Length: 275
Picture 1 (cartoon, rainbow, N blue to C red):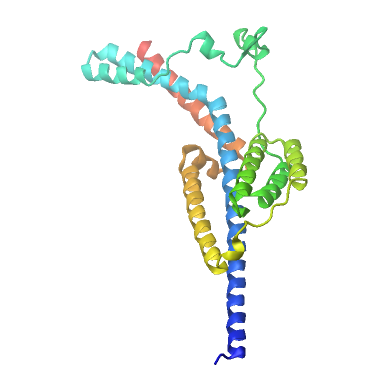
Picture 2 (picture 1 turned 90 degrees about the vertical axis):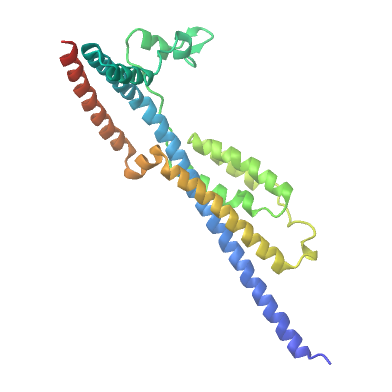
């Protein structure tokens, strides 16, 4: 003989357990999205700093490699020692070959010939460097809000996840360019987009099993993101950026000063050898 009160108590306990699981899933989803926002923001900063680092300091590194090769060659010419000759050959091998004209000006030539920037380079005139891509605070705010609303991890069926994934790709592209206007347009597009229901057939699924599976998937996704974040932080550019997260321009200035000092030191050494 069944006890209605006992059955009711069991049902209530199961409902409370399901509610706790639902809360845990929602918290895990939001935590994962916030973590992914942080990783993507850091990736944009790393890519941006890498571009600036190469643009500004690349010629100095190339100059140092060339001076090292010339110094090694001068030492080898003086000594004639086979080991010095080998070192000179290795140092020369590290120097990038001089690119051809087409390679040098790739992307600088339009239908009318050389672009103004390329013409300035040939004529020895200063060239206006590309503007720095640094998302504004408005772009950051819109980006975070969009990702929190449209993240694919919030989807409950394949079609909705695909739609969200394609949309987030566009959001990330606009954020990478620092295009606040494009992000605003995407935000308006999302608000007027379709509202999808939960995946069909969920009524026939044990909610506890579904929630546990969801938590397991979220944990796996977090591990993948953590690995991506660790890779970014371990990169040379990521490590440099962590040294001065609030003022990367000052860090570039500091590195430039160090490289200029090294160039001057090597030029003096070379002058001694060939003088």
